[in-house]
Length: 353
Image (cartoon, rainbow, N blue to C red; front, side, top):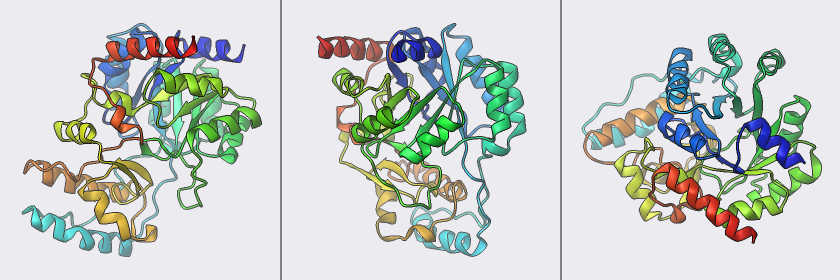
């Protein structure tokens, strides 16, 4: 009954959510996923309200099915001028080797949804079927307004305490993000010790200790993986890395090639300022011996990270990109989204027989 209720709330037939990968999951990807019976997602945390509205409209132009809009709920960055100057100085040799100049100062490039009234107003106007939160929760009045608008609400948890906060906020479901997951950790406080719970352990823990439906995420790449999480009590699985190589993905050629090679992944803070799992590359190597405290806050650190990647790409070098990927990266497949979803559904059915 719990499973059926959540699938009805999400408006989907398959227990599958395409992860909302900001900068990677296009409107075409989300629409194709939703049209195939799963839940397509867009990540708008890096956009302003008008940019997010435009993306929502682009999804709706391609599907009448349900879809998910994901927001970043990080604590706004602290100003740390000394750390920021030192960080620029530390990366200056990398810029020089590329014949480029490092930024003179860093800015907070993303506005957190917790203080973005324009984004809230846009969402209440557009009323997307599902809204999800990463890095924490927005204020109670925001949650109440979205719920009153009839929007299904979901948030990411990396441990039991975060899951219980989501439950207390009366959201509709929890995404249990395991340590294996690609991209940014959804932890509410990136400065606190990370329990680093794997997907299977976290999923089972949240199924047992919370009342909300659980969506498992992290390292899941095929139908057998989906089936395993459903057997543990999850009502659906969220897959991100599995979609990066799809035709509709916004990943650049260097990202796609690195994913195909899949030499391994590492958890790093140096690219953006928050811990995130990335394909091992030239940027992650820089951070192997750098203490967390030396990295500016998210998303301030991301300002110089993006500048370094742009300088490298201009010279045909892709090793400084935010090539987010989970530990299941070697299992990625290059298919159109519709074909991938169809394949996952077939594999899931086979695994359940």
